[in-house]
View 1 (cartoon, helix red, strand yellow):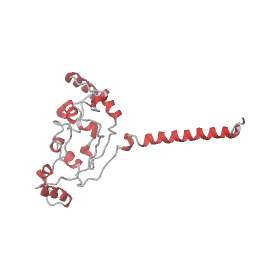
View 2: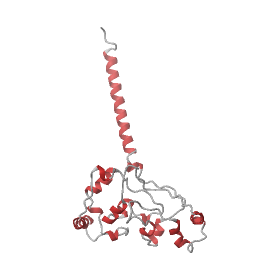
View 3: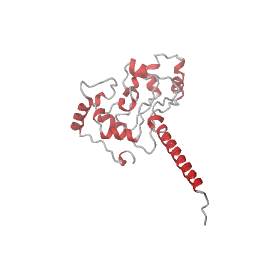
View 4: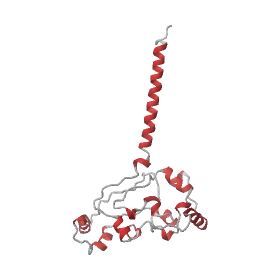
Length: 215
């Protein structure tokens, strides 16, 4: 029985198939790079309903992170500040500024400001702010120097690999817990040396098993 295709045609077909596989493989590699959290999420800077400047409040005015994000040392989540916290100052400061109209409306109606979440984790990921902050992981390690940001942006990928890198080598990110919100603080020597000492003293053992974050 004769072959359905000539040898020459069969060779061309095989070469075309190989080329298609190569193209698809290259496309897959490009897609994997483009859609990796490091490229996809870092730099995310949503437009907020109020042009709140962390650079002004946390940087220039020196307001501590805990004044607004009151739950990070006590709960698993970092609370968005209530309008009442804003109005503690703004009943007297810039009380007629049009930029703060949404804040005043929220205060008058009791309806919260629709702030847009910047740092988002999937629903299947469990993250506990309290566990990290009380262990001595600074806001800077995950959120960057927000005291220098007019608009808050995501500076880290927050991917599983990124988290595991820290859990497997936490020493460079550990500082005395009372300094976690001092965003411009730097140790006198190697931060990893200080971190290693604090880890020994506190018996810190970050888990790297699946159940630590996927419960």
